[in-house]
Length: 295
Image (cartoon, rainbow, N blue to C red; front, side, top):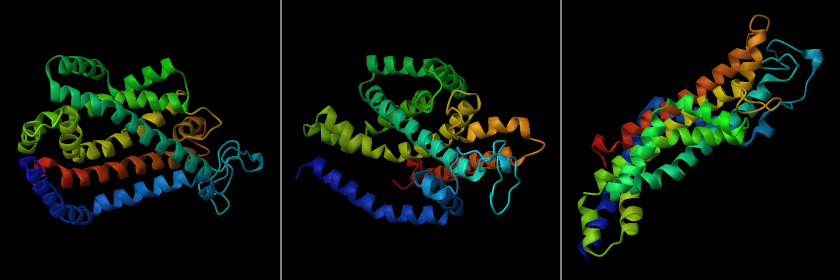
């Protein structure tokens, strides 16, 4: 049995032994559990929006325009008589779509670049670092607005703009984890036993960087949700009459006095979604952080 096999087997046994302890630690964090439950509710509502929404979100009902919350319309109606609860459910679908797809795009591009920069260094690291520094020169929201304005107003373009804006953070975290793990004993053993760069990166470094990347994903999703709401509020994301939490807030500006519920409930939905993912991310960071001691 080679040294690499022995080291890998020991590492796998340790991972299995600490997995249940990490799960228990996560369950003991009530805020993280609450965040996970709320986040799951938002995801399920987004997936099954046609079943959850009581009305057609785009169907006006002028006889019930600006109706206050009640039994017929739990969250009230807007200026066109459209049910606010139905529009909020479909708005959550847009938020979850952007949150998940934008982070997926950032990871799809950022993780390979971070691996290349951290493992090969020199020219690759210099080129990737220059790209990252260029993107980081602009605040996240400014960069997202600029890209969305260039690409054109749509949900797809908003997703691309937010995904690109999140790439620098993913690249930097992946690069830092690669630099740290490249000097681990099991990586040296794999190289000594003839493991190629692809084997080292995909079988030894990337799996052990997963914890940090998972935490980054849970942090990136609420940022993307806020970004989508802002872009839609500015007219650069979802376009009316399609529902979005940002569109709902934008429409509510002219009716804050007679119908405050038009702004209150979409705002609370954004706060709840972002807070839920942040609480879940904090809990995962406490459990999975490699500097926390259980890895």
